[in-house]
Amino acid sequence: MATKNSRKAASKRSAKKSNAKRTNPAKAKAASGNPAKVEPATARDWIAGARPRTLGLAISPVALGTAVAYYTLGYNLLLALLCLGVAVFLQIGVNFANDYSDGVRGTDAHRIDSQRSGPRRLVGSGSAKPRTVLAVALVFFALGAGAGLAIVVITGLWWLLAVGAVLVLAAWAYTGGKLPYGYLGLGELAAFLFFGVIATVGTTFVIIEQWPLEALLAGVIAGFFAAAVMLINNVRDRETDALSGKKTLAVRIGDAPARIVAVVLLAAPYGVLVFFALLFEWAPMVYFTLLITAPTALVVITARTARELVLALQLASLAALLTGLGLAAAIAF
Image 1 (cartoon, helix red, strand yellow):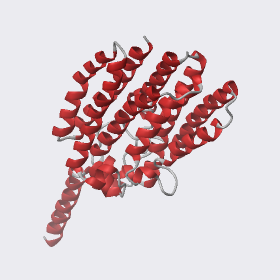
Image 2: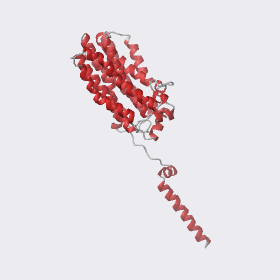
Image 3: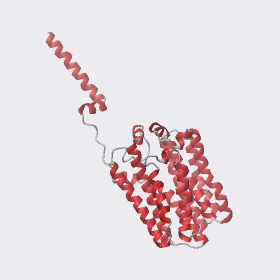
C-alpha cells in the first residue's frame, strides 16, 4: 500500500514539474539547455540598420551649401555629388558604428529587454556578429573618405585631408572609443556642428572656395534640425540609457526639460529663416513646412510611449529634409 501511495505521489510531482515547464517557457528552455535561437539579420534588417530615415539630415546641408554656392558664384555638379557622398556615407557609417559600439558595451541589452521601439539592433539583438557590423561601418567610412579624397584631388586643397580625418574620427567617437562623447551629453552639439554648419559651409567652400554668410545661416538651420532629431531620439531612449550609464543630454537634464529643448530646437530654424525670407522671393514659402514641424512639436511634448516618439522622429526628419530642399530651391531659383 505504501509503495502504491509513493508511486502516486511521485507521479503527481512529475506532473507538476511538467506543467511548470509548459507554463514557464523560459525556465523550460533553461532546463533543457536549448535557448531560443535568434534569427540572423535579413537584408531588410541591414537596410533598416543603415537608418534610411536619417539620411535627410545628410542631404539637406549639402543641398543648402550647393544652392548658396550657385547663388554666390556658380556650382560644380561633380563636387556637389562628392560632398553628398561624404555626408551620406559618413551618416550610414555612424549608424552602423553606433549599433556596434552600443551592442558590445551592453547598452542595447536594456533596450532589448524593454522592447525598444524602432528598427532592430543588429548587435544588441544577436542577429549579426559584432565584427560584421563593425566591418560594414568601416566600409562606409572608407567610402566617405574616398569621396573626400576625390574632392581634395580635384580642388587641390590638400589641407582638407585633415578636415576629413577629423570628420571620420568624430563619426567613430560618437559611441566608439574609450570616452565616447555621445555618452557625455554632447551628441546634440556634434549633430548641430557636423550635420549642420560644417556640412553646409564645407559644401559651399569646396565648390567656390568662399564661405558667405548665407552658407553659415543655412547651416545653422540644418544644424538645429539635426540636433532636434538627436534629442528626440535620446528622449525616447532616456530611461534605458540611464540604466546603462549612457549620460545623454536627455538623461542629464531630465525628461520634461529635454522635451522643451527639443521643441525649441524645432522652432529655432524658423527664426533664422526670416533672414532668407527678406532676401529671397520664394523663401517665405518654406514656412509651410511648419505644417509638419508644429504637429511634431506637439507629439514630442505629449508623447507617452516610445512608439509616439518614433513618429516624432520620422516627422522631424521629414521636416528637416523638406525645409532644407525648399530653402535650397528658394536660394538657387
